[in-house]
Amino acid sequence: MADIRQILDDISENAPVVSDRRRLLYQTARAAALTLIPFGLVNSAKAQGPSPEERVADAMNVLIRLAHMLSDFYKQGLETKGLIPEGPNREALKTIYKHKQVHTAIMWHVIKAQHGIPNPTDSYDFTGGNGSAGGPYPNVMNNSAAFLELAQVMEDVAIRAFKAQTGNLVSDNSAIEVAHRIHTTCGRHAAKIRMIRRELGADIKPWITEKISGIDNEAAKEMYEGEQNTMQETFGGLVDMRHLNGNQTINLQVATEAFDEPVFEAETLQFVNLFTLR
View 1 (tube, rainbow, N blue to C red):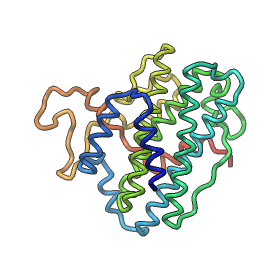
View 2 (view 1 turned 45 degrees about the vertical axis):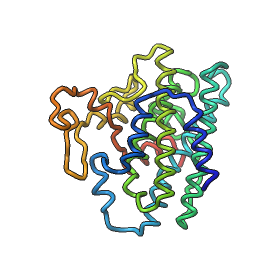
View 3 (view 1 turned 90 degrees about the horizontal axis):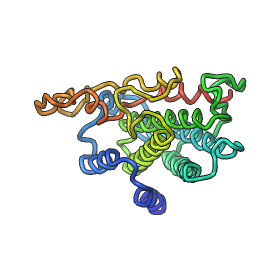
View 4 (view 1 turned 180 degrees about the horizontal axis):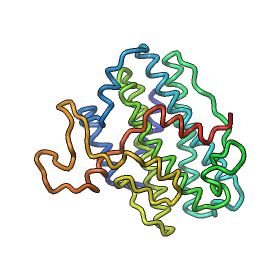
């Protein structure tokens, strides 16, 4: 485990800081642990059913399918001639791809440690057309702007998917640490993709505001539904972030920017299955 921690520490410490907001949230999370959990996760953690080991393995298997897909997405993009021009942006995507490879390897070991069987990698059609190349993202592998749009959606979904599985991982200290560290790195990836798009002219922030995607594609927009939520469940009850501690000056945008809303298993797998060849 020490080697894995060193890898992730290197990623966290050496990667350019692209969002002070995400760094602050990461530091706060480490200090506060699970004092504040997004709405719905408390009940998920209390759910009866599989053993703790099975729950960890099942949760990680959801996430590893997403990680396999992300890794292959960047691999295909980088190998597609002319899609990503040489330069700083291509180098950034190459670094992100390397991180995805690390993530899948780490999750594989976590699943095996729980006596689970890791999901293998799949084959993909990133247009979402099940091999027809005519899905909701038809230009993803022949237009760099379309590729970056889907990269943003995938990274944002990954952040929210990891958050959604928190309640299923809390029984294992190693698993929850791995998940939080990968979640933090995904936050850097999402912010970097957004900043690349912003430099190329997109009207977008490094983080999600309300449910604004900054993308015209309707399928992409659907994946941001729920991000406008301002209600968060704490161990003290449900709290509206706009009125935290009696505050009356926190506006809707600020309140929604403070938290990434979870994307639970069914929606995560529906998203992965859109691109998976079966």
